[in-house]
Length: 139
Image 1 (cartoon, rainbow, N blue to C red):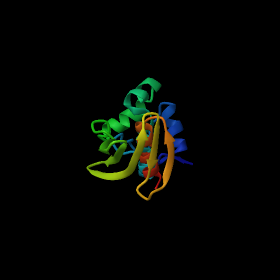
Image 2: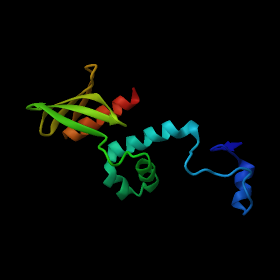
Image 3: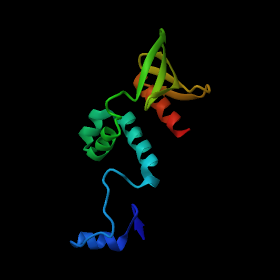
Image 4: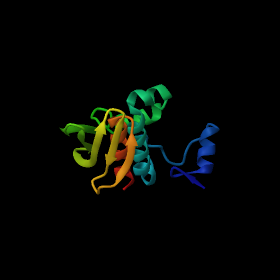
């Protein structure tokens, strides 16, 4: 059985003080799980923010995001178009994508995807923006 590219017997031997048959490169995670893990980490960052992850003790997630350069720039931002209408842009690396529109007023914000699909009503425009970004990541 393999776990993260290593045989279970090798891992067991290393836990008992022995040597692995190949060295572990901490800079290169298992390639099969990299994209899935990065998406999951970004999802958590979008849902809870950096302070929320710190409060929950998700230090591994924060470390991966920091090493990937994702904590320095905002993941999404709102641009006001007119009264009660905001465009949501999602930053992915150096590219930006339109995630949709947030429409409404205080306490009653509707999230609308670029295809016109309504993603429900939210208490804050930030919550509506998060719903749009999570929908975009699922696509």
